[in-house]
Image 1 (spheres, rainbow, N blue to C red):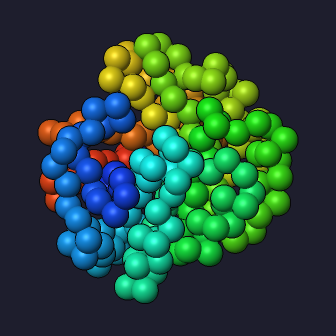
Image 2 (image 1 turned 180 degrees about the vertical axis):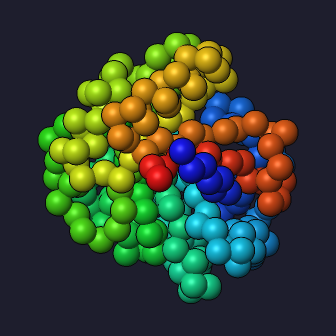
Length: 206
């Protein structure tokens, strides 16, 4: 199966952060330098993934940062802690090209409302703790949710204590269900385009 890497930036306030959820570093890139770091990646014709920490953790996404990117011609793939259709519309209007919807934050009825949006691409996110996904869904159940919501695929977000073999098997099961899987990596040893990027490995169908 084809595999692509997507550079990911963790955004908190107007700063790009190092670290991972629950363990963010005090080291950060601020202001215009943060915008430039993301723009530099897009010049290589790669869509950057922006993990908006404030949006995910507190429902306070940084739309102004997306707008600054849009003014530079960059339309990122954003995970902004969307909790309602209005949140999704705000992110798209601010310049996002694709949105990740975290199933840990959304009720099914809200997901179905979001399925009617035609402004951009939608992905679904699940966590992965130990040996299983949470919310607890089997790959075939996720395939059904993807179909019901017209989503492009699933983003799997492992925590620090996940079982690597179980995660790999889960991703392969998603592929067997014809679901495009993306895996977030918070591994600081990965070769990022800057000290503040991590990677998504995106697996797509031939």
